Length: 356
Ligand SMILES: [Zn+2]
Ligand SMILES: [Zn+2]
Image (cartoon, rainbow, N blue to C red; front, side, top):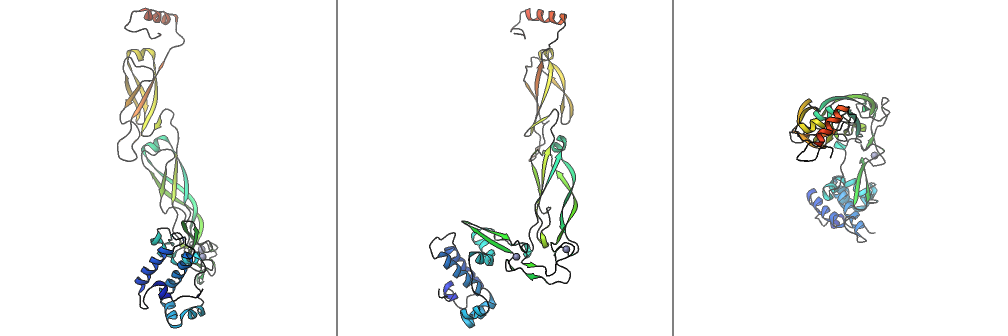
């Protein structure tokens, strides 16, 4: 295909500035982006516009093109784009705000982001309920001190990564989604150490231990996790750190059970206490507490203690504590007790006796 004039392709004047070029290119890219336009020559037009923009937005290439045309650039080794991946790796930043997909580069062109870390933290029931401070020890990669994380031996000159041609990113297209991933060869930095650091074999990081303080808020529950941004492993060769996730497991309590912000416990009383009323000691998160059993309490009745439950994780206050009353029926009566109960059962009553 005969190469068209770049200014004609973008429909701009020969004196167009960077802003005009960008505007013209964005309009064409929006129109011919292969994800948006399925006509047979859209991809070709998209590539053509991208190539024109690549050249005209680069002062050096533009000067050569203005003076010597397409041949001049070819002599300089520029031959346009071979495919969509090429286009995307060159214009990640523009596409990022054009289409909203992630064409981010590492901060400051740095290396690959560090891994996220997961730490399983076991808490007692009370620790989760009222919150606590914990010190945990992480065993993971830290920046190499010898090379200060660069991965290069002192005095060695970095070389451009050939896999990503120094971009640090590789674009992978699939249907509507174009993903930008850090180059695996250089860890997203675009450059490789000429001579690798001996302390870290060029990785820029070494394994080590680190202690961090963790604050568990009151009301935390089993299965929840906390995220500490940037507390994961440091990136390779100066890349941003990953995140740390603290996954919390809460030990069961012998008598208290959680139901959201409420707590449930059981209290077993005798038959006579249920009939006549009484008081009983129950175990609450705040310690033992005496509660009143009203006369005529039935098995399964629930006595609710307001604000004796779980501190609410969001927005203050506390849930309630529900005491489920169980009534124990005696099984080994003395003959005197038996006689008394038979007498009781024979007494006239508003209702039938408790043995029916
Ligand atoms: Zn090192
Ligand atoms: Zn690379």
